[in-house]
Image (spheres, rainbow, N blue to C red):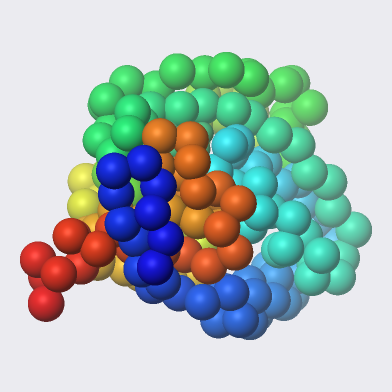
Length: 182
Ligand code: PRP
Ligand code: MN
Ligand code: MG
């Protein structure tokens, strides 16, 4: 159990399980992208831990770059994307794999993909550690999903509650959300 401000969280996915699955995703991506020199595009802030642990297990030549967007305040999506570090032109003609910590409503990923298209990459795929199918309101296919989780608020391993909790090594779930679903 961990408390962040007024909220209490329990472990949902422990570190060992995260790391095993991430290694497995990296092996799959390495096979799929042989000879393609992929460029990973990690979405800050939330994806920093996922990106680091995934990239350690990529076994083919690759590059990594970063964008920074945000749409959440405390535990709710504002529905509006603020771009804090934009896309560079280096994506032109490249095979891009977007790295997200979580695809929730899909607003963030859709905004990034739409922007990315304007820069003419050769291909775009998405790798997300977490996905909430019940909250997802978009049609974009997600090629690599670490874990599908219930529609409950999660923090840790890069994900925050009001900027706190990103340093937790396990994924935690908001206790009141989990209890309501039991
Ligand atoms: C979170 C998360 C994803 C996005 C997913 O980012 O890291 O990027 O929300 O939600 P969505 O699918 O409903 O758009 P946030 O806006 O909180 O910024 P952060 O990564 O800096 O925490
Ligand atoms: Mn994010
Ligand atoms: Mg956030």
